[in-house]
Amino acid sequence: MYKKTMLIISLSFYMAIILLTSFMGTAVGSPNAQPGSQEDPLVTRSYVDRYINERMAPLESAVQNLTNQVAQLEEKINNLSENLGPSVRLTIDNRTAYIGVAAHTLDVAPFIVDGRTMVPFRFIGEALGAEVDWDPATRTVAYVIGNTRIAIPIGSTTIMVNSQPRVVDASASLVDGVTFVPVRMVSEQLGARVNWNPITRQVTILP
Image 1 (cartoon, helix red, strand yellow):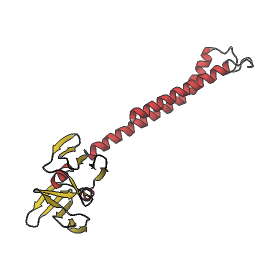
Image 2: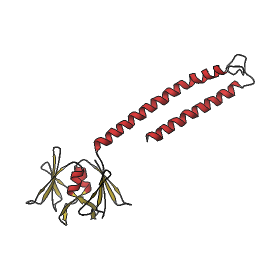
Image 3: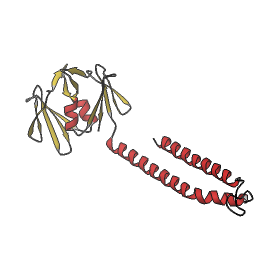
Image 4: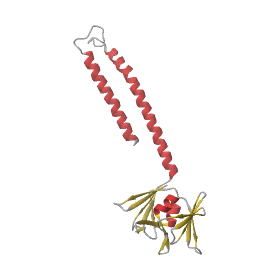
């Protein structure tokens, strides 16, 4: 983005120079000019240079200001990206998942059931910085992140967020000993965003 912006600024700068130079060349060579006027063919080169420099100075200042603003914006974007942490990418029926650029092999691949994308509970929680918990007596998994605890009973559409019940549209399930949870419900409860690519069948979780 920064390189593209700088290219546009540079092209605008040089176009301004070309137009201004073209204008001065036409004016200085005008056959009907009054003696001693700016259009006089006998006006010295130094006069022309000074004339151009005086009019280019504001443009150079404006370009420098834009350059500084672009640099500040790029710095803010980079800082924001670092604070948010890496994205998490999973592909349906594929056991290879990514946290940032690091590849991880899942025990069981994500899948879709009744239109809901199901992802491994522990992998998603740890990737988003949450502590995970399992209560075998109640068959309940839980995420703890900051001051928030999200308890998700297996097979139930009622979850508990800080002991407050919330009804969701899909329940957690066990597949080959691995707990799976609906990706959108869990990600939103953890304050993350979810993108879905129907062509690659890939889900991306953005912290």
